[in-house]
Image 1: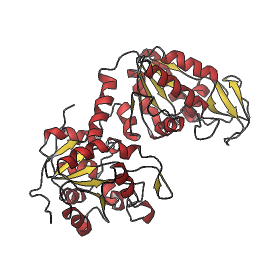
Image 2: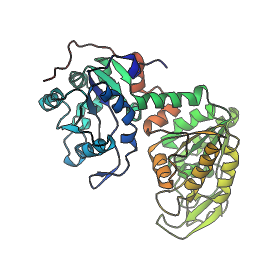
Image 3: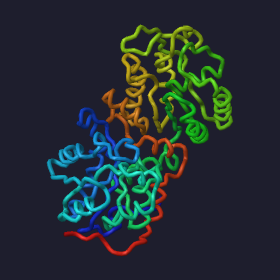
Image 4: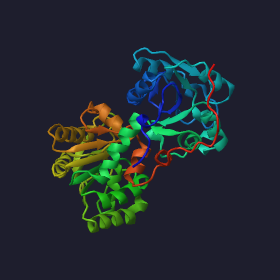
Amino acid sequence: MKFSHLEDIDLAGKTILLRTDLNVPMQGGKVTDHTRILRLLPTLDYLTQRQCRVVLLSHFDRPGGKFVPSLSLAPLVDAVSAALGGREVKFGVDCIGPAARDAVNKLQPGEIVLLENLRFHPEEETGDAPFARELASLGDIFVNDAFSCSHRAHASITGIAQYLPVAAGRLMQEELQVLTGIFSDAQKPIGAVIGGAKVSSKLELLEHLTQTMDILIIGGAMANTFLHAQGHAVGKSLYEKGLKATALKILRQAEKNECRIVLPIDVVAASALQPQAPCTIADIDAIPAESMAVDVGPASIQLFSQALAECKTIVWNGPLGAFETSPFDAGTIALARIIASLTAKQRAHSIAGGGDTVAALTHAGLTQGFSYLSTAGGAFLEWLEGKTLPGVAALMQGGHPHIGGKATHG
């Protein structure tokens, strides 16, 4: 993949529009997981050391194209500043218009400003060209360091790249190098662990992985759909009744492609999805009619462990059970420890990604146990599906300056 890195462009003293993903978990106005902020530091350090004026662009949540005070990026100023060791981070109360331009023009070399939530403007999500052009007019160079947002053809992802020279930030570069390697030069056998709730939400992913993986382990509630398709009674478990034919088709496709699909052989069954609810271990042929499968059982973990022991490369997306509710996090934690152990012993190269997956590994205290942990959710999934991400395509095109002049600085 050919795209410009930071070293490929003369950045010294320039105003850099840095697209980040600061859509981080927050509670009570405080950031509860700083991972995405910390992963931006290599890019921010590189730019500020070269006396760039850095303009941070990000969205937060889904305000629906209007100003929602509770979704302002203002509370993130202190979090970004703290991550930078106390360096001052200024704030612009809008991302376009006089307020944004004034905030940018006041920047001195080496200073940073965070502009307000891009999604307060509906034009961001529609990919509006005039909106992108107005954003672009604030800077000299566009740096995309938001791989996790690059599956969206939004104005700040693909639009700005039409008007300014463009480069990949350090995190973007790292994500692309690691994830490209999954399909281009990964050591085989290669296995994937796919969890989550619905087959329908990961249908394209599963179909693609049957063509690219040697072993495909399916857990979470989506495993129930496959078990139901095979004729197992799954009680009151969450499953997609209408996807029986689709599940069987995926199983046949995997067999044809010599991809071994591994499904649970026992489950943790409970009558209610509540903390510490009474539960039992049940074989997949003996799930109580009034119970639901909420996690994989110990025999399944042993089976999964044996399969993964054969793999040189392991990709993981999605928890194996209702990990948010104890004790139904046991299967996910157990498998995470197994993969972390294989990684530590250098028997496998492991890559994990997706919002729920990162949350599960954080919960298990194993975010450092994998070879690589992607910050992306939807973008990670679409990459695994073999899709070209719009933001990555814009990077590879190298930027197309359509407008003259540069930002002015007071």
